[in-house]
Image (cartoon, rainbow, N blue to C red; front, side, top):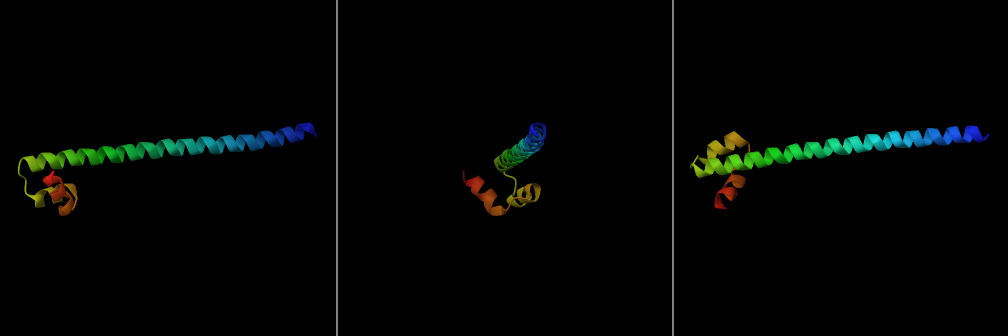
Length: 78
């Protein structure tokens, strides 16, 4: 009887640990994706600033970045 109870507990613990590991892996991947997205945004922001500094027409910057004109104009004001 004790062995059966131990095996059941071990199976539940193993399932919990598998789920925990899966959750940790998903969290790490989500963090990586968020980091990549943040890096892309920062890179695009730097590009917009550089294009504004060389007096590139707003229409060209919109086409190059996919950002809307309002966002780019706000950046131009800074």
